[in-house]
Length: 206
Ligand SMILES: Nc1ncnc2c1ncn2[C@@H]1O[C@H](COP(=O)(O)OP(=O)(O)O)[C@@H](O)[C@H]1O
Ligand SMILES: [Mg+2]
Image 1 (cartoon, rainbow, N blue to C red):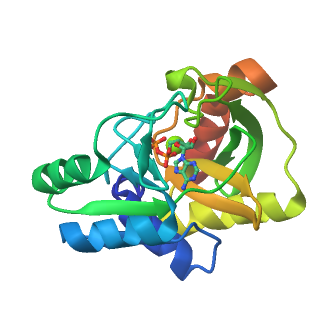
Image 2 (spheres, rainbow, N blue to C red):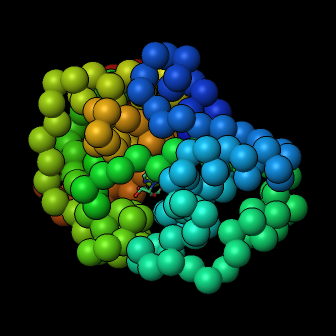
């Protein structure tokens, strides 16, 4: 399960196969094809397939790279793409989902949603991870969002999952499922200690 969750492409494949809403996602090995897809999407993110904590993600909007703080980069994006393909051998490209500067991290243990937090980026920034300066606040999910998260954890196979949701113009989508999420955000925002719930699960199985 952790292997399924570590590889973002494999996760997205499993989520889509389970009928869950995910952003349009492409994996390509060819530089020209990558450039064509990014241009067609008009606003796209390229992520390391084994990435974490919001590291190494780039965004290209209307032919310009957008820095994590929202400013336009002077680095020519096609050169950046060429370098990334050269070092990784492939690119994981996703449509950028317009959002209100926040996403949702949902903690699931054994199919049950224990709590969820909004992660809000600093003003103007577009990466919401707490480790990138995002802040957390409590969040109440809709029943449909709860169902999506339970199903996402099941699709990936993780007993303890941190499901990242993003609320876009077309509804809620699953960005990724983390197999080894930190429990710090839910503890400080909702007062829920996931460790006890994980131990209960282990105890039940003994
Ligand atoms: N398709 C997307 N549309 C909009 N924002 C995104 C998208 N993908 C990633 N992000 C932003 O980047 C952050 C990190 O992306 P994520 O896929 O969760 O990778 P990581 O494993 O690094 O946390 C997200 O929390 C979100 O703020
Ligand atoms: Mg994430």
